[in-house]
Image 1 (tube, rainbow, N blue to C red):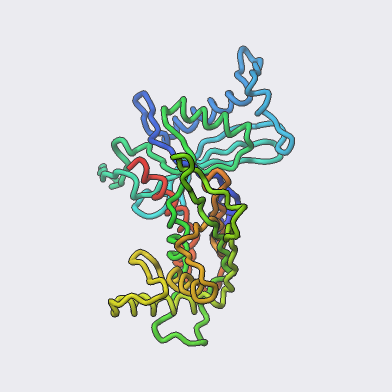
Image 2 (image 1 turned 180 degrees about the horizontal axis):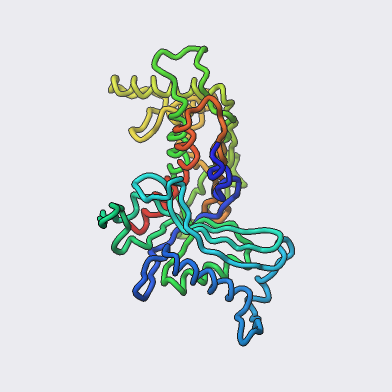
Length: 360
């Protein structure tokens, strides 16, 4: 296993997810990822949190008194802005995730935030010199990092977000994903384990962990005095939340039966009594929807998928509807190295696409 991948800060940390508009920088050097700008903003944010130094004396302010030290991390040593890339070569291409890594280094502990984009969200042009040919971001998207992820204490979060919005004239808001996002990403991951058409019990390829899905019933609205108000579900005997644990050895069977159901519906135009697969549904969702209906009479399309937990990631929504995510580093001997790389950063790439939608 590559040490660089093992030590990637994106793994094994629960991040809050937010979306950001393009960053605006004045002056001749308008690339935030340039070495000069990274060093400048490292020093400036450090001084903002710790307090400015005037004639050799550090002058504290109200903000620095609260954030320059905390109970778990100790005293702040330095804030650093660094380049980040999942591409081990560091070269920008249409593959991989790129961005700016911001580290808040305290004596006992460090906190991280990342501004992220992928190669597809960057307007690229080929620049040729006498020695090399390279691709560089250009235009308004050169400083467009649609996804902001951070794991910070509340006191630092407010300072950091305020610094981004005032310094770069950008807008930051919580990331609210579309209703089918979690299932769509899960389907993309499970494609790695899809069995062939001639499936039998000898098929060995399966996820390393069970899959946990948490559903909740969306709020229902009724008319009261001419206005729509949320119905009090506590007075109703109705399903509000449901958690399903699907054993890992059952996953190939779900995928196989889902593939058969999709193929059968494509051949047969008649409408059966059970729920039929939608064009956008994958085999796992199709099989799970049919299973819930036949076993318990539950229409899965009437429920909202609130949390997904599987081997490469945990994705869920907080009480305010904003998203959170934790990514794990896969170490499976029976999965090809290319598949490991796909699964590692799959949800990260999908989150970047989701974050860029509102500003596309």
